[in-house]
Amino acid sequence: MRRIHERVLGPSKIGISSSTSDIWLLGLCYKISQESSGDVDATSALAAFKQDFSSRILMTYRKGFDAIGETKITSDASWGCMLRSSQMLVAQALLFHRLGRSWRKPSQKPFDLAYIEILHQFGDSETSAFSIHNLVEAGKNYGLAAGSWVGPYAMCRSWESLARSKREENDLECQLLPMAVYVVSGDEDGERGGAPVVCIEDASRHCFEFSRHQADWTPILLLVPLVLGLDKVNPRYIPSLQATFTFPQCLGILGGKPGASTYIVGVQEENVFYLDPHDVQPVVNLSSDNLEADTSSYHCDIIRYIPLDSLDPSLAIGFFCRDKDDFDDFCFRASKLADESNGAPLFTVAQTHSVFKPIIHGDTMADAGGDRMDDSIGVLPTGDVDGNSHEDDWQLL
Image (cartoon, rainbow, N blue to C red; front, side, top):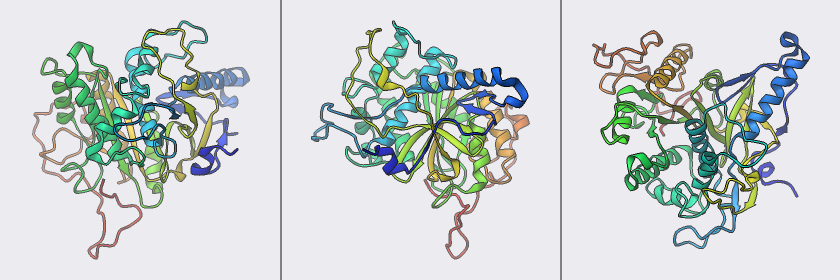
């Protein structure tokens, strides 16, 4: 029987392409060119890439869980792919935070306690903090409902809402998501369109509020929902999308085809590697202290890729910054990328919202209190004077 992902995503390719170009996977580079490094080194790099890929946490459709809320729905098959993709991205942020980017799934048990605890938090029941049940409840104000598909922007806002509610339920030292959550939008929360703005003052405020006014900075998860065209991603944005995978803070992309989300974790030239949530598996709820648990359904060693230009233009990018220095490094890279985008930035960086001046990448670390010129952030128009839209225009989120 044909897999669900082939019906909703269309044909995808399995394995690695014949290209010998570098592969970037969530901020790590794998050099597989045999010309420059020799057969042995290239083979070793390819094996390391496969181990890294298979260590990423996979969330798929599940069946047989307790009904969501007051509904009778006990499976998210055919509608929950965006929720599952977002769970993968947030789970990766937790892996970064608790176990580091170099962590790989051990080949033998017992497993790391932190790894099992992370999986437990994404179980399919109301008792698991980041379950599909709790996501649906947290996202009601953004259109989330059991049985209905949701887009990237609403998904990001739902995570912001869920994180806030869990933060209020627990003491600071017992936070299940031990990081601030910042959904990056444009001026006036995206209502005027244009490239979203990473506002340094906003990021600082989110950290301060997350710490309950006890720390100036904390780990922070940035979610950047984007609309990069009409029917397809405008080619102007593709180089910048590719470049985000070189950021050490990269958490990947929520994206896929219209109505079918995947978790995109890597890139090689014009192709992106992804984890696919469109398999239906029986429900698994792990105990938080079972270090001998079977976690095979949370990983995939089948590598799939699709052309980057085939993605739906509505997507979201994630980044995790573990401290202030890491955030400053992210801002430097993001500002430089915007400077080099030929007028089509994915997002910009600014000190404040009160003055719409992007940060020049050489001044990313500047004091937020400095004088600012009253310059425009260079927003692309959403249409001409007659209201006609253009394919390369930004659209409202």
